[in-house]
Image 1 (tube, rainbow, N blue to C red):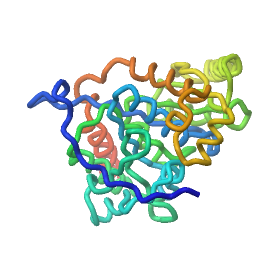
Image 2 (spheres, helix red, strand yellow):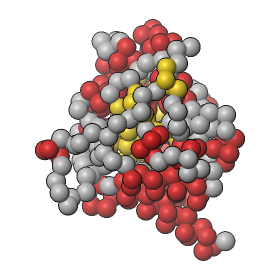
Image 3 (cartoon, rainbow, N blue to C red):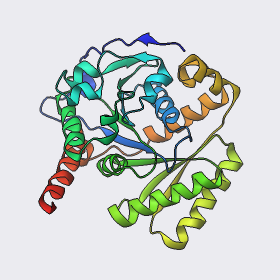
Image 4 (cartoon, rainbow, N blue to C red):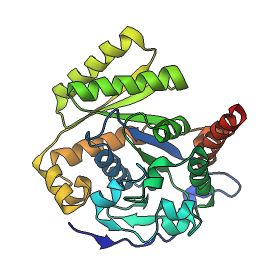
Length: 297
């Protein structure tokens, strides 16, 4: 396994064209989630980040699959600090952010720390509140959530602007995706989902999307947007072994081109407006949820 000491992220001034005194910088927050593990969710998050970075987007990935630190493994990172250190007050968020191969930044999770998998709502809110201290603006924050229906998944999904659901063309993945969308829509009023068919090809991905449409149309009031399919090719598997994104390691491969097409679609989404378009909104949504829970307790 290739593990290199991660370089600390050094804040750099934003480009002049994007820096306007007195105006907060709009940030798109995308939660990448799935109904079950093993669908390649973290791989999607990392490669989407790399592809967006190639388009000139300033991207930060938050590894919110607490306790696993899959992003570290995928990229061969050995960070000095991680979110657990931030939560414990041992460092600031700027200290924990590291540069990743591919031109984007990462807030690493902590591997093997059981407490990270059981963060309270207050601890989660405290972590996200720390984003207001970042020294450099970002265009996109990609939140790589845990899989399934853990409380942290719901919390981060509610605070994001866009939900990207990663699904495989297999019964368990489809069923669990529908279960998660049911929970989001009925229990938390989250009804819009971007669907990405992973480890599939063109026609197979469209067929998978149509399956989801049929299943959700029967009982759920949700809106699904099909983002396309990511094929599983030899180069994607090689990139995993090299601990690099396929976008960086094999930029001309089918899977890399698919991720670049995905990034083009994401970059074309309308810019977030108003309070919903800022990291402060991400913070406020989690804090408001936490305060409501305390009132009801």
